[in-house]
Length: 177
Image (cartoon, rainbow, N blue to C red; front, top):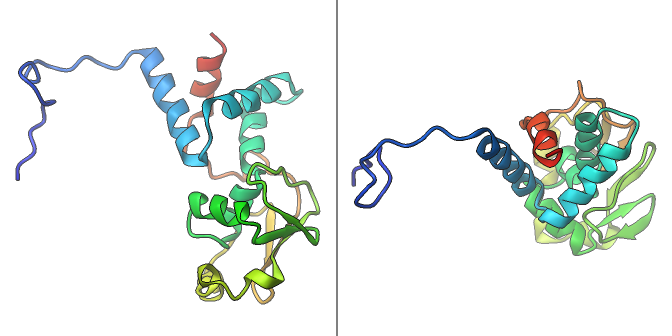
């Protein structure tokens, strides 16, 4: 099977146009939404909250996205992907400060303790977590107790500490129109 550099169809051989500024911004917004597993309405609400904050909009938006419970579980290494973290949180396998939380968009705060629920530790999903976590180092704003599989939010994430592979400035420009 061979791949051609042209798009399919009769007119595919004509050269492609360069992506417009709007197209670049839209593509970046779609990447962020897809990565965090969010729909448009929820993502727009996050942007409006970030735009109304006293911080820079891009740093406030990245902080809002990073402090979601499903993302924190992923960043702690207790789940293999954000979608897996979202599913396990949604099924109620995690506690925050000792209370069961089943809302993936729950925002954690400084000092919150995140742990696998005692009844869920024996589930098949969490069988390999101990071996994976031994080799894993969480971001600087999170602390992980590898023995008890608990995590703590040391402080709210600062843009320098976040490893966000997106250009959130393009997202801000997209919504600012």
